Image (cartoon, rainbow, N blue to C red; front, side, top):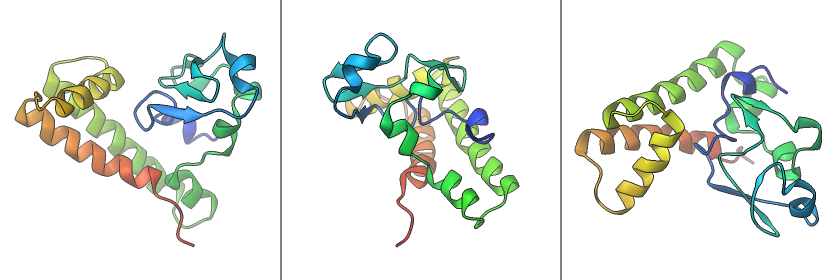
Length: 148
């Protein structure tokens, strides 16, 4: 597990993704350890996450083994420094904390889930909506595919 991942965890805590595909047979194998929605989908936040550490790391789903956010991929390719990668992750976490603060909540990841639901219903306060938009822009960068 990357040291960068151990300071982040947004791919597993529900910040970056709501669901992820499971490979054939993984739902049955992992049903007691992750939140399985159906035979081919798991839900986040991942129940196997303890802080930012995966408790089933050696037996995690294929999608978890294969996924690298763009920041981690850029770091591995030498296109950004460890300092730049950590600064970006810190910015994402700071923006998520600002959203929770704007909503008066203490659980950052939970605040994001609630903010998304309220935004869909057009019921999010303007300050929280602005914080959600700032966080969403940063999260989009993590999901971007690497240039060809």
